Length: 67
Image (cartoon, one colour):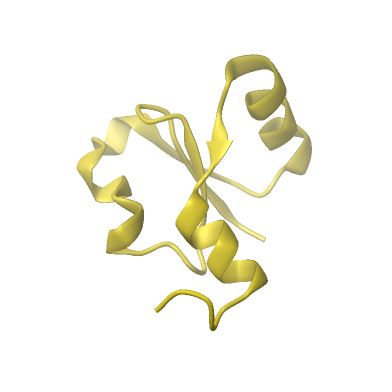
């Protein structure tokens, strides 16, 4: 699974489900990062206060929930 990390908003997006509703496009390119390392994501969440994007993570779990 690939993830897009928005370092400006401190959000983690699932690239498969990320779209305009996630608003990551408002963050400059130099403050975005792609990764697939779960350990890195866990550290960002636990140590640095990052959060999973409410839209694309929920969409990944229950696709019919949000359109």
